[in-house]
Length: 442
Image (cartoon, rainbow, N blue to C red; front, side, top):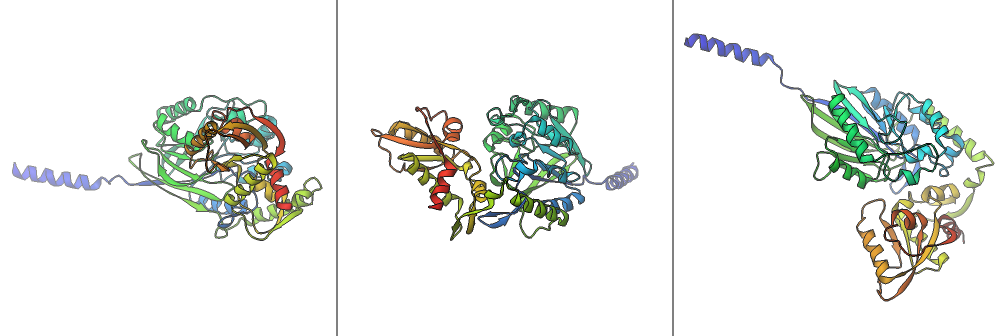
């Protein structure tokens, strides 16, 4: 009997030794967003960044190594830079064979539904938006034996941002809940990823409202944020800023088909990344043709010379000063999202100015009591760290008994801060960017 038990124990040990332990499987995900037709490298506080030739070169190499690659949308931008006004979505097919799926962004509708549909027919990757009528809700990709479910959303602000006819949008949270349910229960995916396109605050709220999302790639807010877990959830978040300045890289590790570890970082797109030479040559030719085009030539003619770089914060201060002076106001406000990049030293042209101030906002003014103005300041303080936070000038000390003349960009007064900007708003006919142009060319 003892011999039989000992023999059985040996057999059991041998059998257990023959069964391999659960091996860790890793899937690499890459994501960029809010390219906005910035084909050329652009000036940033850290030097020259971006450039589609660098992004294509590096991402195509990573794709060959097995990575999944996603775009968060807003790949074109009517008006600024001028690139997409001339070339439309010419770059979309350049991502064929590299990008696995793209989120629909509000600016992707800038040239209308028919133009969008024509662009979509030129690509082999799906364009996703779970709450946009007529678009695919989600997609599933296999990598290293794992099934990765991907969906995208149109933010709750799309109805006010998308002016083109032919687009309609449903509730993003309800659409996300249904997409996650389908991916988890029907598609039986091992991980669920959201690739865009809504503000960071909405992404955080979404993670808390809809369990089952492993990772959200930030977009729309143009925020640069390192990998973090959203408080109160099991969802991770990473946001790659804008214009191909950074690419998000995340490694999802799995054991027994479940996510067990998430690691990630932002990869800077700079001179250290190899360019795709064919794309680089194409961009140079297209940019030269753009600058020669009589329709756009004026944008590239110098209007001033800057002796030193102007940071985003310094540009914002100069802009608010120009707004106060032009509108004869005591206080001026503009959202941080109105200022997209710094200005380099040297010749300044309208294309560079439009890149720094891409939105042609009108200045509106109204009279506010000190108490009303304080409410606006408190509203702004609650939005610290978000893209709807504002730069404010002239409100260092508020007298509740005083009446203030307040100037603001129309987007702030009518959209971002409309719930507290309840005064009688008066249009001035003055444009924010034009007043800055006047100020720098005096």
